Length: 179
Image (cartoon, rainbow, N blue to C red; front, side, top):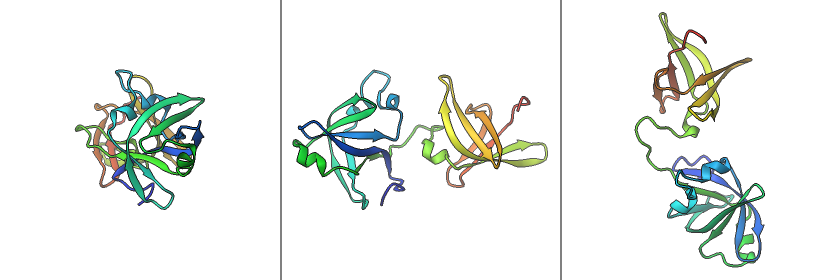
């Protein structure tokens, strides 16, 4: 088990301690805004449990008692870690949470990354490339599809995305005439 463990979502890596009361600094794999829910509460505060995963892939379950942002880091306080010496033991550990089931039609970004994208046209399916990045615009996400030197920015909208098959790592889209 490690970073490729599909049962977990890895949130970031602990890089140092913070203060003397057992807090740690996390470099997030997510944007800082991803840690805040619509009601303004912390995503991690809403979680009952997280996992601390050591460099060998061994994990132990713990609870987050506190979280805040400080100078680009996420500062975390875990149950059972009350001193700087206890917190120092967590350096290079990764913080992960259980992969929760999503509503129909929603996907984890990590499942879409590297997916082959095909355009459906009159002659059948034409391969456009692989998804190499996904970013938000405020109204919808954009898939960055790349094939060798060619790059397409494609809107992640239901009217264009006809099929997503996670097991086959394949997406079929209808290209708008503008593309």
